[in-house]
Amino acid sequence: MIERREQRLESAERSQWSGACTWTDRVMSEKITSRGFQGRRQPGEVAGRLPPGQYVERGFPVLSAGPTQHTPLDRWDFSIGGDIDQPKRWTWNELRALPRESVTKDIHCVTKWSKLDTHWEGVSVDTLLAGVEVRGSYVMAFCDGGYTTNLPLQDLTGGRAWIVDTYEGRPLAPEHGGPVRLLVPHLYFWKSAKWVRGLRVMDQDERGFWESFGYHNYGDPWKEQRYSGD
Image (cartoon, rainbow, N blue to C red; front, side):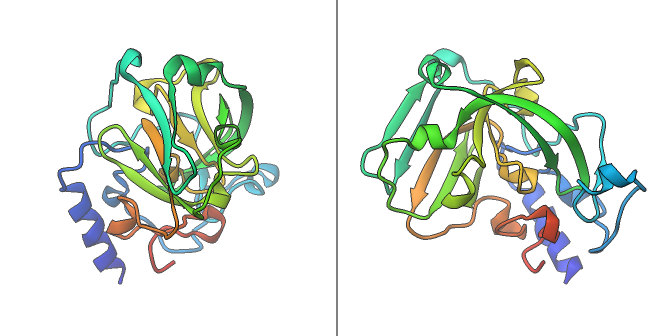
């Protein structure tokens, strides 16, 4: 079963998709250890913040399956559409003018590293959906380069997700998803799509790019939901 999963992921790496949105897009080239692997030993306080199998990473790894995207800000926009009463769209300046939040969160990569106390700034998805009549229960995030990832709507609302443009007090670098990326820190970080350009609300769930190649459809790091059978 593991061998077949790895073969599916290897075939994904060979695909023609150029718009990787995550740090974890080349996970298929890593040797993922079995469920329950505890990684490197961590002090008690830190270990309590690490999902099973994760270790603390001090750096900020950059993993992408395709080239870094560079969309000029004067041609950039962000939209919400699909199963809602009225589509929404913001230019770069309009998005920057919305109420902003500072967020400090731990993030967890499916390749088994975690980075603690990361600092971000951006706009809550709750703010973007304010005043919008949402009819669907699922969302597809879509990005420059063609990448997609799917999430339940409830995982993007209630103060659980943001569209962020600032990391550690600086504009988000392109290699980390700038000008903006989706931040959903309670799920594995492939769900926090790089170079995100919008959200499409759906009445039925659809699998995104890596989910269709064998990644778990949800991706809870505390349950080690890496592959579809986990």
